[in-house]
Image (cartoon, rainbow, N blue to C red; front, side):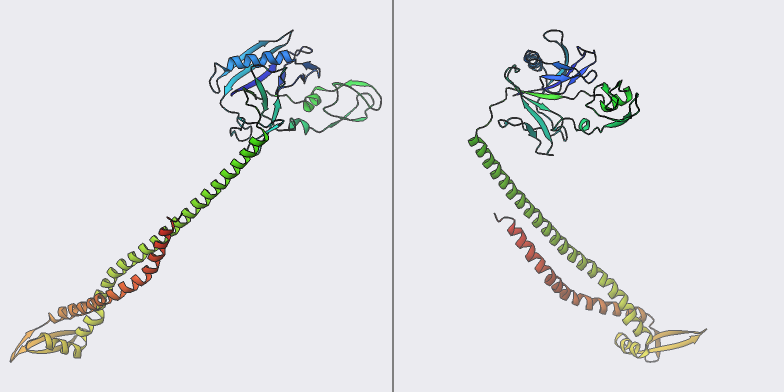
Length: 380
């Protein structure tokens, strides 16, 4: 099927010489300037569609070509024609489904945004090159902006009566009160008849025949089946994403427990070192009974502690005597600190298996839940 995009304009109205815009297929058009009707015959449309079909045969998508058409009689027309791969929605530019149009359809719905496009069947008498349908860009029901123009009140130039002037009034109108004729001023006339812009519309050539009732039923059944299958796939995809998110969350929880175990283990040795110094080492050094107990085990002679007070401070000296010979044993302070550190680090090392057991007790349920979720991913 070939799709042609068309912009049409009569450059000179036969009555007033002002341009007239054609924004769709019609047998006649009203000049916005002089309000006279211009007839467009079947022969005119066959000429337009034939020229359009011939020109678009040589054009690529969106490549536009300007045509000057001399129609039968004195009617001239300017046309911008281009070939299209699809008809875009006037609202969201989504390609419209024009391949299978139902018989008797008067509108074409955009399934993306719900915008209604005017659809008109081209009569055989006006058709050429199998031009079948005309698709308008505007909304259904005509130009809403024009329909919404409210009447305007003005005073009659003759009797000063208040008159409501609407779009339906002629340019030279008659007062309802004094029956006098007057010309509607230019500003008011232009307000009621805004300048019309050229809007594109589309012609569908080589359109396939409308589907039968049986084909439509089969098509609806197929669409429903496809929609159900798509819904099932979407639900399955959503389930997989939820399971993967849960597995990722459990992996993060397991990794967080393991990182905390490693960091707290290293921190425990630092705490054991400081605790060994302050909780065991210093009491051994400064508490005389403890110093004598531990020093007696380290010294191969007689261990003694000497306390000296000078300048408001207390000094401790340690000695190891062998008979009458007394030797300084101040290295005892270092031994005391090392003993304290060794004891606390040993206690922490012995506690590590208990902590590891507690860690496994916390991780094991998380790993079991993760394994169950991973197995459920493979369940059809």
